[in-house]
Length: 75
Image (cartoon, rainbow, N blue to C red; front, side, top):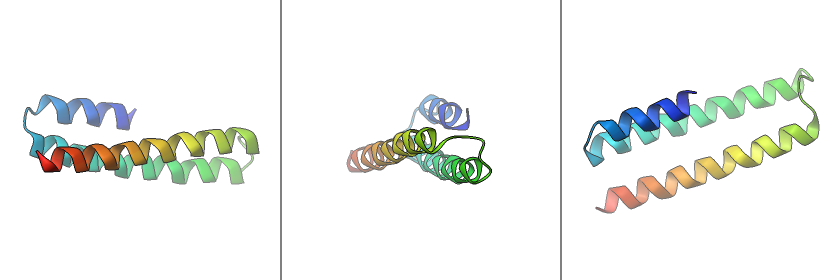
């Protein structure tokens, strides 16, 4: 929820500088989710297959965010 909300808030700020700031916040939120994902797996709340799928998704989101931040920083 935090990831989606911060992307929306940053976009609504109407400046690239503020949007980039919120994208960094989103990237940090993705790191928090990744940490919680490891914990959920360690506590056996999710299976190894679920863990791997979700970890791959989070990794892709982080890569996408990094690329988008780089793109916006060049404008």
